[in-house]
Image 1 (cartoon, rainbow, N blue to C red):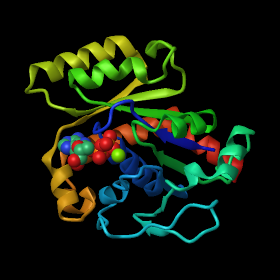
Image 2: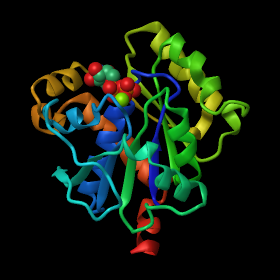
Image 3: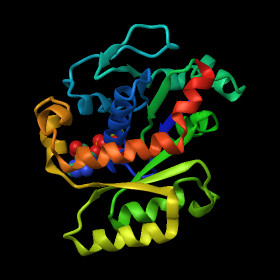
Image 4: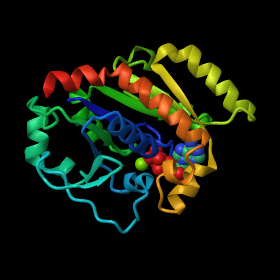
Length: 237
Ligand SMILES: Nc1ncnc2c1ncn2[C@@H]1O[C@H](COP(=O)(O)OP(=O)(O)O)[C@@H](O)[C@H]1O
Ligand SMILES: [Mg+2]
């Protein structure tokens, strides 16, 4: 630890976008950050400005050599999530994330096995929602069998907020009432996110004054505070 587990019960909400920016923000604050892409889609790297064809090293503990972008070591971890030794170690309570680095894990919406494997080791789960009825309907699936409002250690982000749309405004009000402080922040809908990815550039380079980037920085700061990253890394290093 600290492991920040980015997972949403609904795909396409911006989990990879948030994970990448969380990692970059923490690196900019001087932390040693490792971003682990547990998805088969392999799209986390696109938010760092990498090309789709750019291969990533597989994560096998923190000793391997990784590609570093914006101060973040980026690994693929899709294979790892299926390795019996890794699964057994995590299930036995042994964590490969206890080395003072900050790990940001991007886990696909449908991959409940990996979510459940990592969750007991996570400092904080980060769940991204959209102001869409389909995303809100999936709230009950964040952790089956447990009411969303009772989830400890979970921070929610409302992404792609657009105050010019009535449903978006109402969804924000609803979530604020439902989740209270667990709704850690909002990120505005901003075409610069897609344009930057299309240009294979990080948004900080493509559109440094963009609304999404400024919102994302505020959200990342709030998450770092909630997860007490500074204290957690001090204890471990
Ligand atoms: N704040 C935003 N404004 C506009 N587009 C966004 C924003 N956040 C994410 N996107 C776009 O939404 C799509 C899904 O994002 P992604 O992070 O891949 O979702 P997930 O990992 O949840 O499947 C991508 O095309 C991404 O560029
Ligand atoms: Mg994704």
